[in-house]
Length: 209
Image (cartoon, rainbow, N blue to C red; front, top):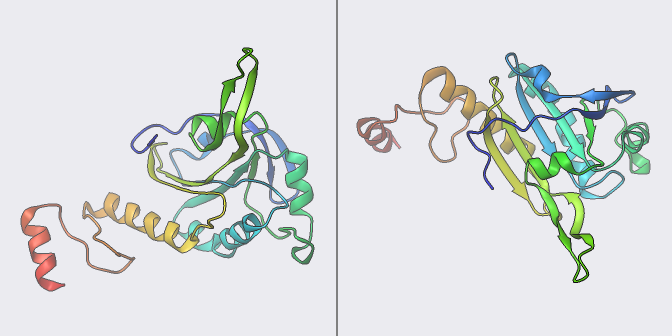
């Protein structure tokens, strides 16, 4: 299900801030009106591909901040698991040094509302409720604008790591489009030519390129 153009689902959940502080009712809505929000889901703490992605987000955190964007991670692990992982050194499989928030989605409701849960609730032949699939989230990324509207969405399968540089590229494109009203062509990156969305605009762009 595509959530593009829709309001980001609201929630309040436990989270770890700054790598060392647990809060009980964290919400992304606190950033609406001021910041872009990059919300990404990952399958699990203490796993294999996940720390490479989370540490990559931290590596580029200043680039996001320069664009008035906050980065927030979310998985189905508890806030206590997040805290332990955040305090575990990298050479021991941890992500120590990561400062952006990590949300706990133990109830699976956030992943379900964003439609990124790797499985579904179902029933046995006897009518008993059962979860079918893997109760973790896919590697999903959402860019939410300052009005709380989802403007970018991507979902990777569990074994496919995402590109943080590509997320930054899409954030740049969104910012450019909002600021100048110009659309961004294929492979566009910050500083490249864009054009007004008219037949004349695309014709002139194609002539130059």
